[in-house]
Image 1 (cartoon, protein in one colour):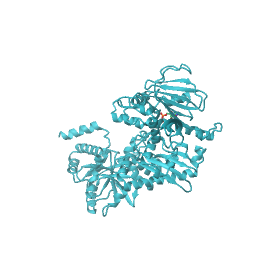
Image 2 (cartoon, rainbow, N blue to C red; image 1 turned 180 degrees about the horizontal axis):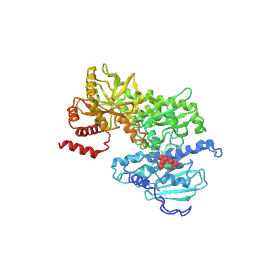
Image 3 (tube, rainbow, N blue to C red; image 1 turned 120 degrees about the horizontal axis):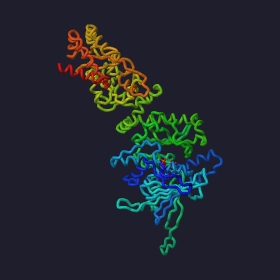
Image 4 (tube, rainbow, N blue to C red; image 1 turned 120 degrees about the vertical axis):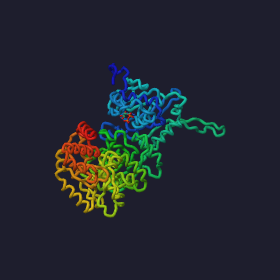
Length: 638
Ligand code: ADP
């Protein structure tokens, strides 16, 4: 948001940060975020990205004559003036880019801050956004960025002292790239900022967080060298050292990488404040050779369920980044996986279109899919608690994968999905359900509704439970679509307890109820007419134990599926075929029979009330609540 006019190239009035950025900055400056150290890795990563961008461009743009070994990052500090400077000779930024990139956080504007966030939530926000560049405000009271873009002769200085705003003025910078000068805060009672002006400390930080960066990170370091052995005299020699080992972590043998290294790499590269739940590092030799380092996050990224989320793995060709997010490397059902793939078999200056067609890429994608799947299967077998934690976060995605694309991947995923078992009161796999099926049990029973407790109190559940059969409780909107796509498991069909044809009664019971329905066919027909076209049929049933009524369905569309369809923006009018079932053993049946003979008006009222009851139990709305409420009171007042 620009608050005053542009006064020309050289002088420019102070601009305000966009309002959301401003609040995030406030949080950052008055930060309670404990790990201030991360600011350095954020700035180094940005510099490395800028070098990557430039180098990659030089491969296709012949005018840019750039050698990889000229590229690097330089750190220097000045204790007296309290400055720490990070310089790179990467792609740099134009004036517009400075404005665009450093004037806004979360450009999409999806972030909405809650004023009354708790302390912990604030920490979360800072972490969740990675917030890159802005983290430098945790340790500085002023930041000056001078940048010259590879596309321009001009250079500009961006300066800010925090939430107040920033200025951009013309500058003089002889070489391409970006120089960031941090004016380090004075020590306070809580924190010693001085450490960011210490050679030893800075070296440690680079080693810890940025060792894998593929460009050299250099700093002028001091060595004490023995000058005179006899007199024990030392002299300080200054020498430029490369602080990082530069071997990308994924190229190192597994035995040389500590868990902590993987975790730091992940948190830095993918801007997560939490360690990953699972790390998968592999090196594949064969038709196509590649190295991959994959991570399953321990929580869903903040934008995971929004349209902005883009799946994909970073794709490198022999250590050089080709593409930040190569979507073709991951199926949608594993879209939560983060990581990198590095292959020598991919040509560097391959265009995106050609890349999609590349057989090597397809092969890598296939291997990666099966690697992730095997790892998840192993986790489920050997580390169930962790798997359940994973499944609670990303299970919906797997279930969606079962029915997506007309169920073409269902066999790959059917052993990874879990549902809540009524008997065990926890998540189980379908295979575990099938193993425990009783003698004579024909189907895998499931019931669906908005929550475990709501499903548990469905009238239809009783009959199945009475037989001591387990029931899978489905509470996610994708669940029934997933089950419908699976159709069966190990030759056993799935059956919805609300299906009209569950067929759990004995022959005798079936005969008995058939007779009751025939004897009272007029009564049932009249009830159906009173309710109208919303239902297909009204019948007496012996499947209910204590409950008076329920709705059952026929055909492929269940009531829960209908609710999902109803909620879609383009209502396709897909409706479940419902039957109102009345418990023949319940006193209400006798009452209905009596009223049918003696008092038709009252009979109609009962019909409407009972139908409404059945809808409420099924979690369906009542279209005419005032009328029903009136009817209930009329009946109660008799
Ligand atoms: P992120 O790195 O997560 O995109 P940052 O706030 O760290 O967010 O940086 C914002 C943007 O500023 C970067 O995406 C990049 O385009 C630009 N940028 C930051 N540092 C540099 C740099 N050293 N050289 C060139 N561009 C940079």
